[in-house]
Length: 65
Length: 434
Image 1 (tube, rainbow over the protein chains, first blue to last red):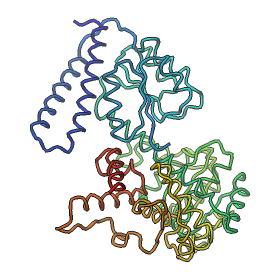
Image 2 (image 1 turned 90 degrees about the vertical axis):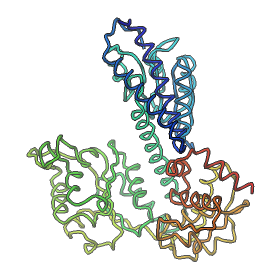
Image 3 (image 1 turned 120 degrees about the horizontal axis):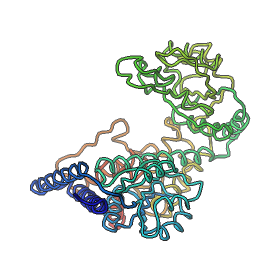
């Protein structure tokens, strides 16, 4: 079981990945390179699973912020 | 201010950088801060349309930032934090911050937040520009309108505004509300834009279960405008049955929500408008007409405003200068022609013609030519392209048309075309340098 502090850090890192993927998605919006879109789809799905796992995990004492 | 402002206060530099990039691509002006000490001096001096705050900062919390923000701050404040501390979350939403979003941010949440902020910014910009344009002009007819507004605004009398389309009826309603001193807000409804069967619910609200799909109680615009002003545009398009009920609400000062039984007192000042001829024949029941037209105001068509036309065109050029950073002027030799034209679309048409000429013409002087504006597209939203046109010509025409459609608003045009505002600027700059 991860400590609250580690869970918090993990949320922050996943947040960077989520917004970074959103930025890439927007940059590739008008690209017709299908393999890149598929790669993004897979990464977004993996990120979604990580977020779900995180939401379902136990949390210890919480750090601030 | 030409773009909505986003302030990001977060010590995560990667997140801040990505978020700023996304927001800039949507037309935002972004500012990043990584600590309380870093953010507070700037936020004390600048208003923002959206502030996204982390909770944990190296020298304090997001709550400390909010506590030091000026009382008059008008933009939305949103906490974006990974905290699950319920007490902190409760304190965050107890402050003027309107929302709390947990990390990791979901793409659709961020998208919705940015869209909502952009939309509110555009509405405010539109209202601000519209308000300033209404006050332009020294013609006797506009002096008379201003006097009428100043006379009736502080009273509780209902006002009926008539005038051709494009003469600024909503602007007059906003001016009446602004000078009324009423504490509530102004709520605007276009009766012609809402299907008759929905209008009753929109105006007077409904109770849960009043009809299929009424899953929750809904407050109508009458209740939303409590203590303020309700502007009913195109009142002549309101179904006769609703006119009867509206009259009853105005006479009694009480309404009953659809499907309800409780009589709810309402204190709302009504300003109504119609482009139809003044008088009971304009689609209004005569009893409602006389109830609404306690103080009638007729807005003059642009062709009757003489020298105001040149002043307005110059004002539109100045607005475009502020938006583009240029310093163009209205060509003096086109003013006579503008004053002689009939302007069937009134101020709205003059504005579109001025912005079109501004964007199309090189050089410092802007020659507005009403009869030649958008000759092939005035009646349609379609564009025609022929085989043989260059890609550049297609891009130019599409950009011009989209800018004209959005009345020169580059942010809206960029969104509509699915490109960044920077791309629009680059395109225009390239064309200017050709």
